[in-house]
Length: 147
Image (cartoon, rainbow, N blue to C red):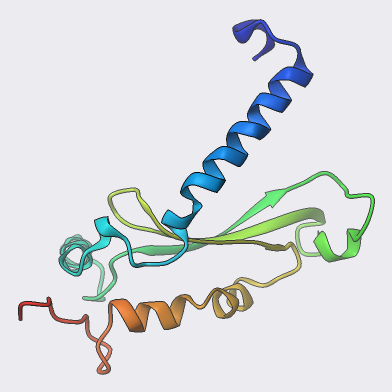
């Protein structure tokens, strides 16, 4: 990046951090819950039908959840909290739900590197959100508002 932008490393670091801060402040709310304009009630139905038609056995799977690990440098403090004994590195984790169109429907984190994916799922409240926005009491997808 130094060669490309003609700026020294400290300036590039500052610019990058300020830009990430700005993006987070302005747009992080778009990933906070499933109540998104692009994720209207008919969109998950379309995604689910597409996924099922490609061979998935479930008829109500509209997105894919993933726990992602990001390795970090060994911190000066609280090393044990961020250390993942399984991977033998210090890290932070995120949980995301990605729709077939490539959009991130939900993002939760960061959490401690030691946290298991199932614990992250509980802490995120994603299951409650899914039942509130997308699923009927019988486990099927909720009907469109007009149905």
